[in-house]
Image: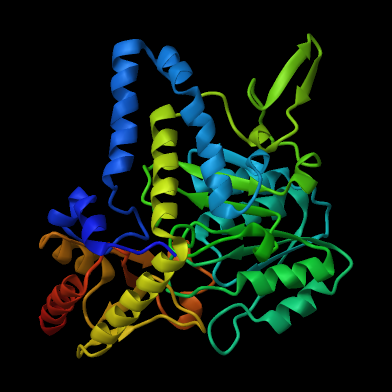
Length: 395
């Protein structure tokens, strides 16, 4: 396992010297190699021309697929690059062949955009949305999932690996095992887990995985990717095609390309994609096992500090917890907490019921404050953050 040199990692992160950043689950601080990749290509576009710069960067552009494939343990032909995880998720799910009455199984951790997409599918395709409840730990109930899968018409299972509003890490590999046994398609939203946890799609057993660049991977905004199992890709036709996704072979006929790039579009932000590749390579250079170990320990320390503050309640549930810590402050709304901390150059975010209608209201909550650490976070920052929250809780 590569050694995680925190001092070096912080030197490579200009933002560490500007803000106390505990919003890595929203958008992480970019490391210097990502900045260099993005700005370097933009300079080439300015001096060479956009098309010409893209042609000159062809090898680097293609290498991004190899980097994402290494990150996920899949083949490069199973990777598509998108402008967001949500774009990838909605496009893939809309491509799945659903028949009226088929079950779409989801959980309380489902993200708001995904849930809206499922409701839209229900309206358009006539499928049935089945909610599997949590177990006593707060994660998806595997026994209840097995019961839901024991049905002749299961379209697919949708699981959010790490929800937006909690530190929970759902048991994705166990869900994958149950889906394999039931011969059901498994769609995994890894938006909040990629970059903080090691992911291997073969071990996870998923047929589709979606991820973003801007969160724990520390890449640019406007970047994402999709893994599509090559065993199913030929059965999926995206709702919208263009000249990259398909070839116009005669005036009245087109052929869809055979790999996952059928889910891409020709026009894209080349600089951002190169930044995504640099971010993936940067994460791999540290080692995802080392990142996961450090972030889990830091987040546990953060929860311990917060739990010791009168008037503050930690809201995380789950048998396994990751890099996100959520909490509430008595008498102080989440937006106010965010604003007052930002005035002190400390970054956190608010997670609300509009993004988690199946979870937060079920727990009697309308919102939580979300603080998220990364491997560049240090204990001194957590101490300072706890002091800031303690002041808020007293006022």
